[in-house]
Picture 1 (cartoon, rainbow, N blue to C red):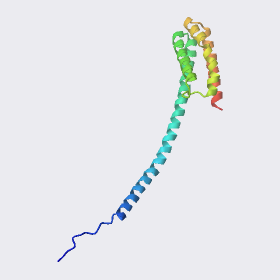
Picture 2 (spheres, rainbow, N blue to C red; picture 1 turned 30 degrees about the vertical axis):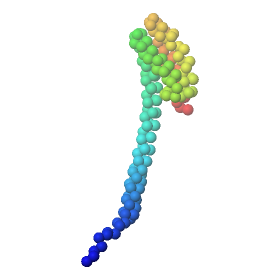
Picture 3 (tube, one colour; picture 1 turned 90 degrees about the vertical axis):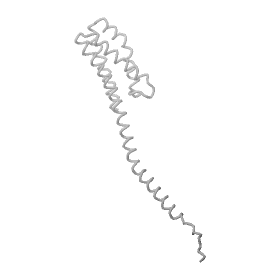
Picture 4 (tube, rainbow, N blue to C red; picture 1 turned 135 degrees about the horizontal axis):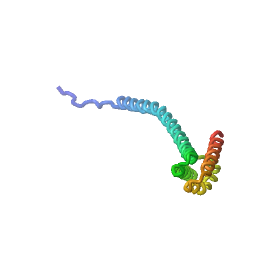
Length: 152
């Protein structure tokens, strides 16, 4: 009655191999699901950056148009504040390195507009009627530069 109490070693290589395959298939399935989501996220990020760029340009244009309209109506203080906002935004965008909504060509073309800042702000502070024409001319120049370079 001698029983062999020794048990045979359990073969785990077959069990381990199937676990490794399952883990590899799970990782592969994860990657297959991850790649399309990553591509969609990248596209959405690119679209967001372009929308933010356009928003920045439109906000500057809006400030300038508001200044011109208010000056034309004789509301010089409101026009001065809007013109100041425009020039502040323009200075920020032209001096931002790499993070600007403007291209290098736009920065180079818009830089001369900053030289008119002091004359326009002073004319608005004095309530000079000529400031409306100055702002209208500045608005037209801004639009021409941005539209011309954006269409390229």
